[in-house]
Amino acid sequence: MSVTHHRRLGIAAGAAFLTVAVAGCSGLGRTAVGTVTYDTPRGRHIQVSNPVVTGCHRLAPGGAVSLANRTLIDFVMYGTPDCTGKGTTYIATTLSDVIAPGEGPWRSYTIVH
Image 1 (tube, helix red, strand yellow):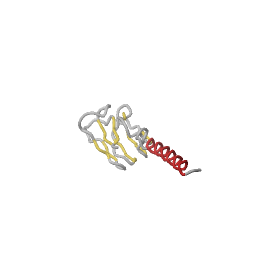
Image 2: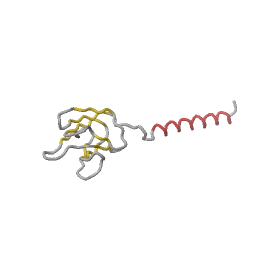
Image 3: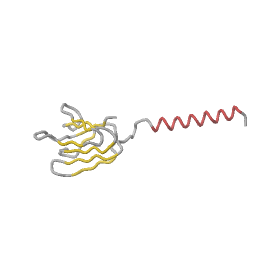
Image 4: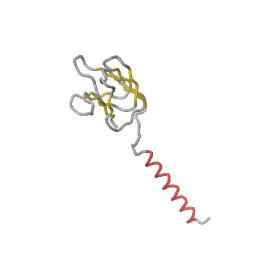
């Protein structure tokens, strides 16, 4: 094998590796490693494992009155089902929070990434 042939093989292997590496780090399908648990106003306990980091996530009908973030990423909680509006609550990684007395439940969340 000539030096030129080895060089071409090295370039092809490097290009293939780079393509795989870029595809793996693209953010598509990335998840927040861990679990999120929350309680609904009716006392139902719900657990979500490894939620996707992109988009708005709706909570169960009725929303949530408490949430435990056991992931490696922070959450922003909303009182609306479409992740809009004022009065958000920030729940950092490995922390928990509950709704203040007299406030409505959280209806959705986004993940800070």
